[in-house]
Image 1 (cartoon, rainbow over the protein chains, first blue to last red):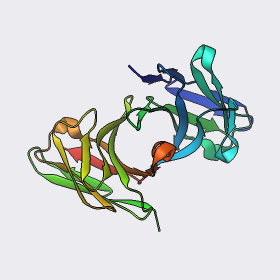
Image 2: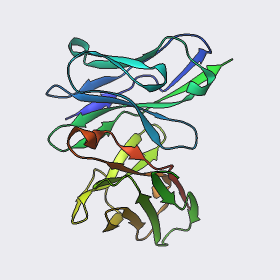
Image 3: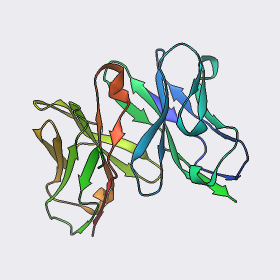
Length: 113
Length: 114
């Protein structure tokens, strides 16, 4: 069965530090992969997406993610975190034959000044 | 104005009461979804609708029903609310093809069942 694992429930970083949020997926074919962000009191917003091609994808707000098939991973990165990046981040896989998204359990990012 | 709106934003209700959560969108999308979010569980799909006449159960549909009144409106009902339905509920919309995964979410409804 398809699944998404986000091993880190909560991450704390200092403002200006680099960030990497981990995501591993289980899927039988080439996956469609996504990162969504949920700011406090708001709905989810799409950060970036991967369908095919270049395995390093750029998103909004300075985020990027790299698809690594050999590791079944799609980790999210940002070189320098801003206080406004504090939010919850969800990795998701798109299931091709059902047109549905399966979400991970989320990683809450806290940013200290 | 927001593309996807949800009403109410917060609701406290008692066990056994019927409650309806409403969602409206101005994106012009055919596809609409209802999810619930629980701490540590991420988002789980309750129901989804690919057009006005196509409604499907998600992974956790028991205890819920939906109505797609128009392309722009998709309502979620709890016929007889129970405390374990306390959660944050999100409505989302999407386009077709690969855009089906690029979902636009409403701000959420926080529901508490006492």
